[in-house]
View (spheres, rainbow, N blue to C red):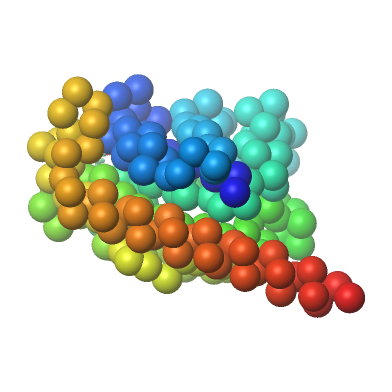
Length: 185
Ligand SMILES: Cc1cc2nc3c(=O)[nH]c(=O)nc-3n(C[C@H](O)[C@H](O)[C@H](O)COP(=O)(O)O)c2cc1C
């Protein structure tokens, strides 16, 4: 399977970017993965041409079997950075790369209750684009500034939930691939 991790943070030392690297390191070696940031995506404006960064991100989402988005919670919702990137990817709507794409979400926040609201808001947006959301388990790494040591996620519960989420994403992507092929016959 080909995984694409999209970090909803534009910070260089982002906890969400770190979470994605740690998540994919839990995968078996047979899978391919890559993590991209939303830092270089310009502010969305419908009348503007797509920049190379936007085109590259669109291609990467198209080519991925599974997209994993990790978003910070900003003021009880997702980050402006992830919404901005999604808005670019969403046009034209009928050819947007999230249609029939298996998407899992997670979050790392420094707050002790952060994440659920950000992800719930993100699910609404992704559903509107036709993404197939991995139903769970829900992965919220709270107090995340205390859960990494030298760049490595130390919280065993988070690691267990992430592994289950990625495994469920693989099952869903395999089932969906089969169903879409059958549908074309
Ligand atoms: C504008 C702003 C709003 C924030 N709002 C929340 C919040 O609602 N809940 C929360 O848990 N953390 C909140 N935080 C703290 C973030 O969880 C923290 O900055 C986290 O490191 C962001 O992830 P990142 O390191 O990947 O950018 C906020 C941070 C900023 C800058």
